[in-house]
Structures are given as C-alpha cells and as structure tokens.
Length: 439
Image 1 (tube, rainbow, N blue to C red):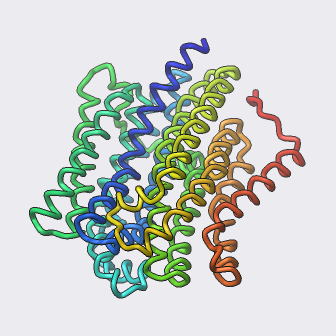
Image 2 (cartoon, rainbow, N blue to C red):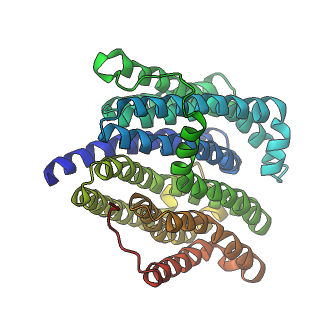
C-alpha cells in the first residue's frame, strides 16, 4: 500500500510542480528577459504587477482548489454524478469571473489600476503597459490553472505536465520575439504569457478526446446549485484567504519598500520576490499533491495513507528548501546578474538581502504546508487562522521596521514568520489538537 501511495505521490507532485510553473515561472522568465532586454526598471514594473497575478490566482484557489478537493472526494467514493456537478459549477464560475476581471481591470480602469500599484514616475509607464495586457488576459490565466487542477485529479497528470511545459516554452520564445524583434517592449512580455496560457488550455482540452476520461464531463443542472457553490467556496477558503492576504502583503510591501528604499531597493526586493516564486514551485506542488492525493485517502478512510502522503510532503519540501537556500547563499550576485543587473550599487545590496530572504522563506514554507495538514484533518479553525497569519503578520512588522530601523527592513519577513511559528505551536498545544481522521 505504501509503495502504491509513494508512486502516486511523486506522479501527482511533479505534475503539480509543472502546473505551478504556469503561475509563477512565467513571471520569473518575464523578469529575466525584460531585465536583459529592457532595464532593471522593467523587472521592478513586473514585480509591482504581482498583486494582480496573485489576486487572479486567489480566485483560482477559491474556486478550483476547493472544487478539486470535492471532485477528489467524490471520485474516491465512486460518486461520479457529484464529481461532474462540482466540475461543471467550478468551470462556470472560473470563466465568468475571468471575464469580469478582464473587462473591469483591463478595459475600463487600466490607468487607475497601474497608478494604485506604482507611485514612481520613472517605472509607472512600464508598469501600466505590462498590467493592462495581463488583466485583459485574465480568463486565460484562471482557466489554465483550473483545467490543470481538474485534469490532474481526473487521472492525467502527465498531460498537465506536457501542457505546462509547452505553455512556458511558448512564453519564453514569444518573449524574445515580441520584445526584441517586434519592438513591443514590456507589453510583448505580458502578451507572450497570455498566448502561452491559451496554448496550454488547448492542450488540456485534448484530455476529453479519450472516452475513458469522460467520467468528468460538464453536466448543466440547477439542482442544489447554491449549496454546491457554498461547498466549493468553503473548501477553497483557507487557501484563498492565505492567497488574498498574500496579495495584500505584496501590495503593502511594494509600497513600503518603494517609499523607504527607493528605486534601488524596489529592484532588490523584486529579486527577492522572484526568489519566492522559485520556492513556490516546490511549495505549490507539495500542497496541491497533499490536497488531491490526501483528499482521496480521506475519502477512502485510509488514515495510514494520509500520514504517508504528509510525511512525503514534508520530506520533499525540506530537501527542496535546503538545495534552494544553499544556491542562493553561494551565488547571490549571480542571481542579480541573471536579471540584467549591472549597476554596482544594486549588485552590492542584492547579496545580503537575497541571503536573508532565502532563510526567511523556510519557516513560511513549513507553515503553509502545515495549513494543508490541518485542513485534511478537518481542523478548519487552525487552517483559517494560519491563512490570515501567513501574510498579515508581516505587514505590521514591515511597517514598524521601516519606521524605526529602516536599515534592517529586510529582516521583517524572517521575524514575522518566527512569531507565527511560535503562536501556532502554542495554539496547537493549548487546544490539545490531535491529527486523526474523524469518523
């Protein structure tokens, strides 16, 4: 049994890591190419746009992460009709919400959105051009992530892997074509990302060409519609709350860092946020695997299977963090140069800051995985508490450090995550929480 779960774990894991590529590595690739072909300010503009991407990802988590767990539960219990209903309703919500965000943010209020996120006059034009195309392409982002989740749960993680690999390959190639050959500047970068997602969606849709995969097909009924939506949203709420808090953190942190450290500081901070995207590849893959494979074990009442999945998850994320952290500590300025940095002041500041952030993200990753564990064991209050604490603790710490010790502002994340870990440990012990499946 353990061997079967181990095989399934790594099959799901690598598929979901590749899914995460479509959400975060596209931004990293954009940053590298823009930094080398345009300027360091282009990298900063992309980083200032990350609250938008994170907000779109939040909507995906709210709808598809919750629905994905419900579909997994239903498939594990052989309730195909329930799985089809959750799949259909999640897909409808995904498409509708994507269109609304595209019209409001990309077509009606593009200038206002850019001004809200960027206050630096030198960076603002670049940020505006990048953000508008990104917002117009919002349906492609959220549908790509949603279909990836459902296709993976329905037993085709390899197709998800293929779709994401081709998605990012198209993005990479078109980045260079649009920026360098067509002369579209930073607009070409975001356009390449959107087109890459559209290609990925087309590949994922081939999943339903196989008759064996049609157990998960759209079924349009109104029976229990509101109740289904409530269950989908309640299941996805902890991850979505954590993500919306992260959106607030990205917005607040960009504002505080830009005000406190200026143009040089915001570029260095952009490097740190790209480093977080690398951590997020492994973190997102681990958490999605815990949700999908762990939920199937919960649906089957297999407590030993749940524990095996959790152990593999923590083991993998530990190895991934150690390797990533060591690379950052050894080659910090190499990372800065990778993003086109050649200004001596920016290079000198980047090394110590990147090393601090490499350590800061370690407790963040463990706390995030622990949130999924609480969710699997139906400890919803603790999961929700962690969702809020993960990001909201950082904001006041960052603000206090910027006001009273601005020279140590880069330690804010590490301090905040250590505080969170201590509080979570105290709450767990104080409430005598036990990790066991409810009968």
